[in-house]
Length: 279
Image 1 (cartoon, helix red, strand yellow):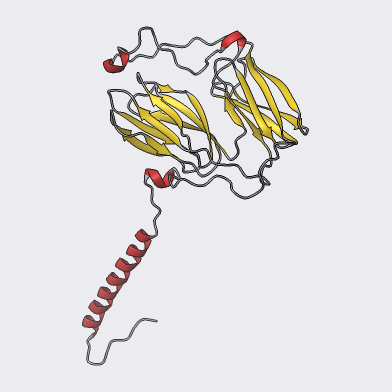
Image 2: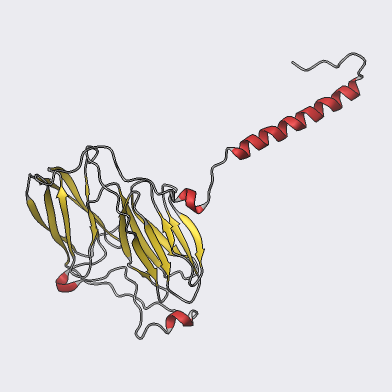
């Protein structure tokens, strides 16, 4: 209902009074809306409030727990990689005595494959897992990230260090709003991030040097490992049960197989990539 003018007020004065009131109301509504907007700072997006590890549930019974160990093999042709051109960044180029190749496909020793994330998928909701306060460290050195692939549990810290004499800009891309975009000057403090939910994997780039990237997997349990030069993995202290043993590789994608772990059983598994797989 339109408000009526007060006694003795003409219609022109009444209309101006209404317009003033509506302006005040609009300002108040805008202020409330802005106050309700989410914080998009890097700390808020990446869950940098150090969330606790899963504390509900019972500890895994080591007397009945089993394990799965194995090797990731590569039976195929290693794709040819084009050397990285660092001519525009002489401070980094001079740190390398030989051409630097991307780590997209990194063969290991004796026909194995590096940089494969190996992890279990299953129901671990009945168990609690302690938090690891030792950070997974990624170093920027020679305008490269090392390691190229890493993994952490939800709530555990990831630490990014700039050991170069040049500035980097770390841009973590997340499907679940766990990313951040932050410049890191030479000699500055490490960037530390924690994550609040599982994501396999996140890609992290340097927007100033486009060849620089690494991957981080975030899992809600401790049953994961990234393969090194020997291509091996060992997932221990696993509660008996049925699980999906899953592997992920940057160039060759995901493989999955069902395993059943019996009490005190150690399963030995070999998984082979042929180079014909696609992400």
